[in-house]
Length: 170
Image 1 (cartoon, rainbow, N blue to C red):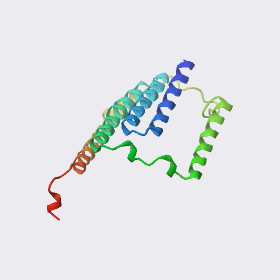
Image 2 (tube, one colour):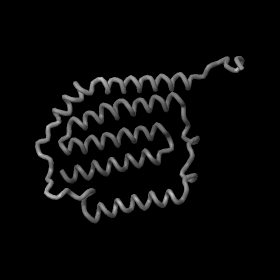
Image 3 (spheres, rainbow, N blue to C red):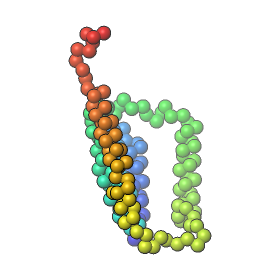
Image 4 (cartoon, rainbow, N blue to C red):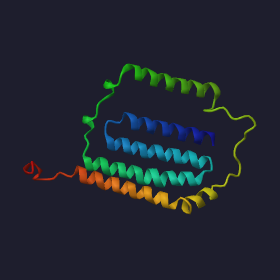
């Protein structure tokens, strides 16, 4: 189990790095999708099946697909994106120091966060209550957010459409 966790964590980190360094937006979205699959695998390893399912359904299934649709609709070229050379050197050093401190802290202690005193693993946590509330109490807000995403997608379609003859109006 420890090997599987380490493999999924490394897979997720590599895919997340692929999102950041990818020059093509479609490749970045695919790396984001694989990163979300790795996080869902980590949730499954923690016996949080509902969270893994919701992560794949909402983020990987809807948000990444919407992102890919908008990127392909806008026809963004990879060479139009500014490179890292425009990023100030101070910001690079701060980011590198934070990542280095996190990696050193992880290897020094062998875990990401220190456990709370007397706290053990949460055994027998039921996600049935969360699922019940999600599909009863919070069903309307989830549907409203879905419609807002649909409206945003339609707005992008209208804004990106090339209208012919608009030059004559001016």
